[in-house]
Length: 317
Image (cartoon, rainbow, N blue to C red; front, side, top):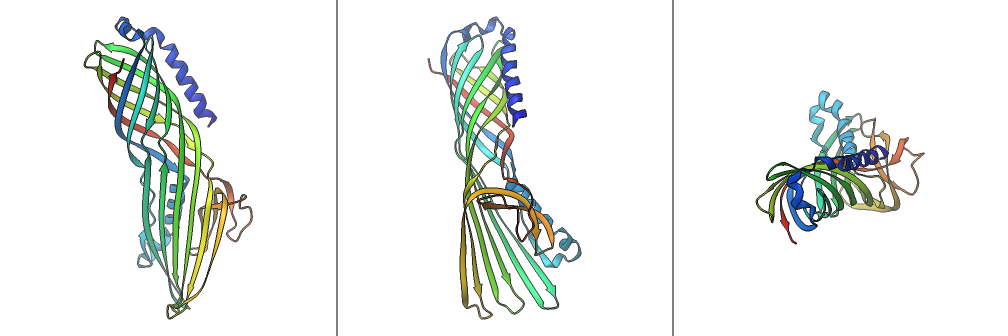
């Protein structure tokens, strides 16, 4: 994160160093004015641990797919990382091509559900494991503070570069259902859910083209890079077990609720016998456990990405 803050600071310094680039055509912008900007477009984010974990889970079955494709049906998919974006901003032109803006963007929801059935054939008989992952990312409307440096490149066209800060609040929600049907037809259902939240102040920068229809209306096209990460999530998790006999009759059930921090680590997967990425809510880092955890750290949501928007700028007064 230090590199991202340094990059943003350097970018804002560039805004001020560009002061001499303002030409005579900016005389009209030297008077103070307020503008309303409405933008719409699309963007993408890197996502981070939630998707790398899903990718890691799917990859441990690659060997089964190669040698026994009939024993592995389906795929554990990553969450799509593209989203539709809109933004409303109130701008204050303070003179000499400098503009300060306060913006609110729309909420973002990324979601996917995927299935995989793994069949184990050994001396005891045939066992099937049905895996279902339902994963969701919710990002509340971020509030952004922007600084623009604008200069004229043609009589009706302005180019501006910008940098600023954004406040992001996010939730990560996942439900994993594991249904195991044993060789004698008894079966076990395990459901593991977590719901965690986190927040972070992040940095962004971009560039914008403005075409002026007149002194009151302009059309905008903007590209913006986001360098933000939410690095701390806390919340709740619950693991529920249900056992049924060979006739499908209910035998027993129990639940293990947990509150704590969301951790990412590498651990053993006993179904395939390989190590993979895992996410767990725990009161403390999982240093010891049945799956031999290693590389333990707090999980993060990677909001780094790019957004492209077009919009309308209206001079209020």
